[in-house]
Image (cartoon, rainbow, N blue to C red):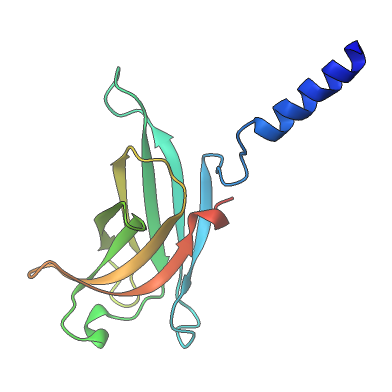
Length: 150
């Protein structure tokens, strides 16, 4: 009888315990792939990890993006820059500017955002076109989902 109760409790704990299937372990990184398959050289990466910026406050999540071989933003219309954009559908989004390196042609675009307090589940990370004067956010060029974070 004791064995039956022990087995029943173990099964109950396994069935009722919270699942960690959707949780990511940090730090992790993901490859950002082009939305337009004609951009064969365009790629990016996003690094996601916890940072402790304001001790003794709690850690925040950082998303850092590096993107390479992107076309000139003006090739897509009235855009002059790229931005990192991450969001949890119907909940919250984060937007941050990516800055080009000083190369004359094909600069590397990079930027980061350090103040995320939300749980990083079902997050999509994108590189999008941007107009810095009008603050207009354009279409996405690269993207990935946090589920791809390794």
